[in-house]
Image (cartoon, rainbow, N blue to C red):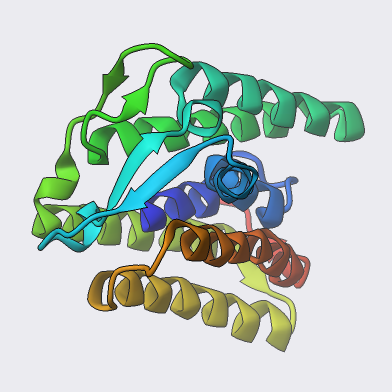
Length: 217
């Protein structure tokens, strides 16, 4: 649910306008930011499998510390709590915590039953990925809706606020298409290294968001 997570980040700006889009984008992406680190450390495991569906090329053997429901709540409390300690902006802290947990909810809807409720606990999943057409349609609608909310709630103060914002949106869309149309990843290590590039997205979002200003309803 790559675009779905991005949609949550964009839409969150409406509820927490004082919070940087970089932080709001990092929240729903947090579990996927932690996951490649845990893969490289050998704490979690994924394998590449053959599948006609581009969404089912990875078998998530074990990822309880980054992607279980209980741990998503823990990461959400830590991230939101840390933000509150620094800013004292309660609404932003709550939105950030909810954003982190939303990742598990969206993954639960799309994944096969491989989403653990807690480390060592039962695994669940509604398996939307078995229908690529439905997955693409739902993610695309969420993505467009999230962008629309963000663009309605903010406006560019200069060219960076406009050009860098649209470049970010186009990059996310292109990356999503590449993941669907491209070949399967060669190895778990390559997956982890590639996924580390996600760490750049919150910084990019924070950069152009500083060049935009809030717009009242």
